[in-house]
Length: 287
Image (cartoon, rainbow, N blue to C red; front, side, top):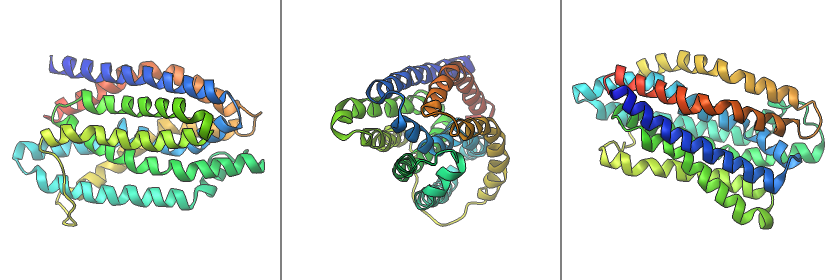
């Protein structure tokens, strides 16, 4: 019954998030159509969005939850919580700064067909802003894993809906006045709001971490499990990079059409499979 209850809670929140995600995408299509702007945006957002899927929908959860659940049983979770939060935050910051600095090379790597100067420069410009979303979504994934271990599923799952709502509102209010910057601002502000949405629940559960550079004994075990978990989930994401890579050589708008098409078949996966998997992981781990 616990599995069913948690799965329904997570899946309901995820379904709401996916529906609001379609509203967000409809806003993008309405205000910007299928154009150079949308192609550049989806190319620039490819890596940050993949990072969200790897950490927010599987990889980090799979490695962290079983270890943290055991420490909760033992009543020794605080040192691990603080240690993982500190080094995970530093990792997120490093990846974010690296992405901002090397944005030009990232775009060349994932979309080599983007060669027209204005198109390429727009994608690089957007990417430098959108990489900041990596930092926020990484920390959101941390709090999702922590709260899932405590049996809190609705709030972390609905946090993505908060991102979609904020982005849709930003587009509606600023698209005419700011143009493509409405997309950039929507992602950054939405990512920050998504992170903040976790904080009240984390406070109520007594799970607000503190920065410390003392390495917990289980930190090495977490890293040992994290790599294969990320590799496993990463294989599934590889196809999206290949799609973007190939579509970049096609006519203008191909990347946008591909993105909108992918969103359709992802709905049942996100609403059902992810909810069941995260709930089952927490229950089997003793959370």
